[in-house]
Length: 257
Image 1 (cartoon, rainbow, N blue to C red):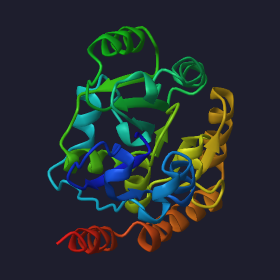
Image 2 (spheres, rainbow, N blue to C red):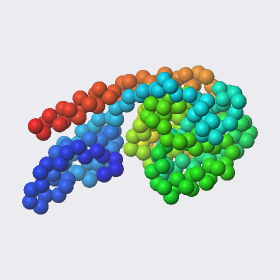
Image 3 (cartoon, one colour):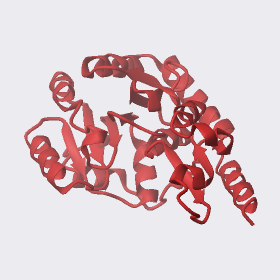
Image 4 (tube, rainbow, N blue to C red):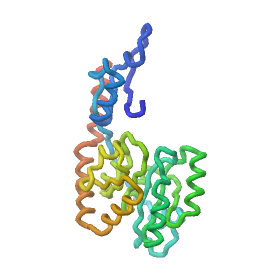
């Protein structure tokens, strides 16, 4: 099940269904637990809630200028740019082309605003489509996949981390951006709204045009930017501790021994 991590199954006996054989399951949020209970009515007591833990690690050798140039961003003074970094695997559910047209129009009005898409090429056919569109679109660039440390370094240097997914369970990129002290602009879908409280831990948008509007607010309102960065960092520290996640899974595993 996409929205639920099935932690362990008991040994198969007789004609028991898979649901009946679940020893325990873990959902990232209370809402996902509620949705899962609709499928596992008799097993609801075995479903636990544990938010995804997050930990960031920034490469000390990362070069921002080289990263941008290798992505096709050719400008002498790169520090003047406002780079919006869309972190996602190249597959349709992540919808990386959702903002391309309107962002390009915005870039033509103000060339300092650029969008860089970065992530693994998961769907080869769709990747070709993304590459083709990006090549002919001003202000939008496609970066080669980097190591986790380099990706975190790029996220830390960008103006904002963007999410444009059609569907999300719990976006690691959003949590990592918050942990790194980078403002988040996320598409208003249930999975993202569970993490991003609008104007408090980040900004939500429901259309490409609203994305530009919220981006402009982030550019012009320093108090808003500082607030979402501060609250986003605190939110991750309080609710997405990697240590707490490990302890929860260890406790559940210990019940099997």
